[in-house]
Image (cartoon, rainbow, N blue to C red; front, top):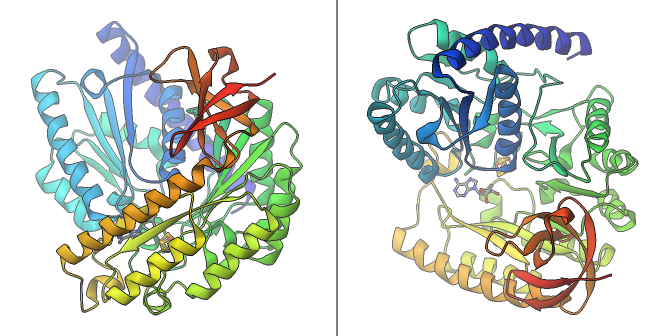
Length: 473
Ligand code: 5AD
Ligand code: SF4
């Protein structure tokens, strides 16, 4: 997609923003106050970043105040569908929202977007059973929010626009950052891996990498705006750049990001073990800015299951990568994702997973019960594991992960390390909270003037998954 195309679509959307602004002004006059919105984000960092873009557009239109659902004029749910209970939650929330609309907020407009809306069955359910919803759109057309809202305001019916896929990447969308000092930056969209349990490739489409110049330009701008930490986002960042007209690897991209002045911390998410290159490990070892945290989804410790999951690595290969990471960055924190109860998982398979957890000693692990997603190959596999067995394994895994996590997370007690202060402590207003390079939270006494800066903090006590510290200086 060339630059002109971006601008052309960008201009078109600017026109709709202007049209919507007029409508918003009228509403504002009628209500005698500013317009309020509520965006709720479910799921991963990619959705969180999409929501920042959506709220950027909303603010340009004139929805300037964030509010609780009951008081909002526009509510948007940005949905996730990676596991089934995420979907069930959305329907529950929509039901509640409908009563709010009926009872006390008749002017409320309701929109649903995100991954769940990329599934035709879910859209059908909304169309039939949730007729009070005003707008439905998917993951590929979020940049058209103003246009879609304009249609929502001018057509007296539910507006539904879901694209099956796209190769378009629209640049220069306005975005509102949740934190002024850190930001997510999309480097690629979609996923080509088709892990057999996963619905993401179906709802997020084929892998598309952003042009490196656009990425660097965005990060330079962020830095000028005061951002110190960037999180490079993609479903599989290690395969970044493979489909670009002039291919550039992820490690080469990291070298470029490293050069941007003002950026002090670089994070990225998510890495797939199969594409993790030695070159990347070398960059990690030599970088001044890349944080000492690596999220490396394991999914299962059984090579037999990994093959059925279409993951393209074995238990041994995974352990070898971990060893290389630790050799390059000795104090690196490693976190992971693990699924329990994948079809055909035996006790032996599960013990292999526990074995990897014991060997790697993860700082933390997101543990998931396998959720059957219609349309994925695993949904049709025989030997779905009975619920009680899965539950038992899940509990055993969680206990192990937590015990090890607590032991590992306290390893820096006594050291003084840089902390990026993120916010006032939620419990104690005399304290602030921030993160170490390895992503562990630290709470310490300090004023809100520290928010956004990186300061040295002595780690006094480990509380399992976070530290209590003391500002040093
Ligand atoms: N069931 C359970 N967990 C899943 N994940 C992806 N798909 C499923 C599923 N069908 C988990 C994986 C992935 C994380 C984001 O969600 O562990 O890494
Ligand atoms: Fe899903 Fe696998 Fe792609 Fe991750 S790499 S989004 S688990 S298909």
